[in-house]
Amino acid sequence: MITFYAFCRIIDDLVDDLDIPINERVASLNNWRNGLEKGFAEPDELQTEIISLIERYNISKQPFFDIIDGCASDLHPQRFNTWEDLQKYTYCVASCVGIISTRIFGCTHPDSEKYAITLGHALQLTNILRDVDEDLTNGGRIYLPLDDLIRFQYSEQDLLDRVYDERFTAMMAYQAERADKLYAEAIALTPSNDAKALKAAEAMRKIYQGMLKKMRNDHFQVFSQRYSLSKPKKIAILLSTIF
Image (cartoon, one colour):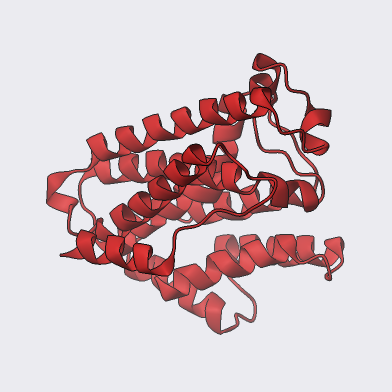
């Protein structure tokens, strides 16, 4: 998991590091993708470990490609018209992380992959709600489906101007309800014979659901603060899940 986390971290950093020219970031992402697909000419330590990881756990390379492609899509401003459009993105950057993790965790039941996909959508949507302000600052990124902004008569310009009113909180509550349904669906998909292997994922679910509840109770003050749970709260959730 440390090796896999390092892979996710370096791919994400390549996209977000504005100090590196965009053509160099694109070349580095392509090098990773081509290396995984055809073999690295001169693999570094992490690349060697990732290839070993794929072989040891018999993991498909496709979710690795999807993670790279999903992150690479953030190199240029993009918008998502519908929730279905956004799901294609959340699948790549979050659900695929879960799919690979279930292999490393040792899951064997087919529903564990369905659990990972659904939980990935829920976690990423929670991230999107938390990071609205940060994403606007980082190149004017908007991940909220534009159809949902229209549904609540809240414009893209309103969001760019950080207009906080009843339209905004209603739209955010609508997204939070969508995330809650996804969390509930993930719980229902949890196979009992993989429950032990999925304890880390379940701890993550509880932490993110707790953060979502905190945002909702505070009426989504995301323009003025970045929500998180305290370290003692996270430790309590982790210990209660494990034991």
